Image (cartoon, rainbow, N blue to C red; front, side):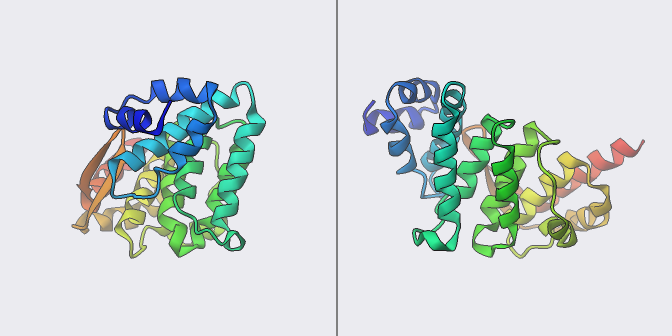
Length: 217
């Protein structure tokens, strides 16, 4: 599969042909990675999602290939790489989401990077994507809990992901903060299921608060 064909599939949100091609030709992964850096571009997010799906399929028969890829992305997140993190946290979130049992340790390492401001939004998204399908997989670090799960972060995107994480994990200790965010009119754009979704922090917070209150009954 050529890069132009990959881009055509991404444009149509047809990810399965890419997954099938990558199983036969690993250069497809490299071409996908080259497309993930513009987070204002829908194509980049679809490429990130596709890499997770590709990783899940390849890991069924050759987990070491994907572990090596994951280590490369972790290296990019660390200062010594010199390359900048790019979309490494988001990519790792998709990889762990696709093969949670094999890469639970990677997910926990990603969680530990929440304190890096440059990485925080990507890390919180990764946590959300992982716990969305496996709420039991990650342990929220004491430091992250002491920081109120970053619910009061200045970045609205971080607050959005933190709210969704709190809702999934039913972290009722943060319910007062969640309710307070019901007055936050900041808008956010979140990628999910192939499209951008524009919503407000208030709408997310009110949904999460209602869910938490419902569980108390």
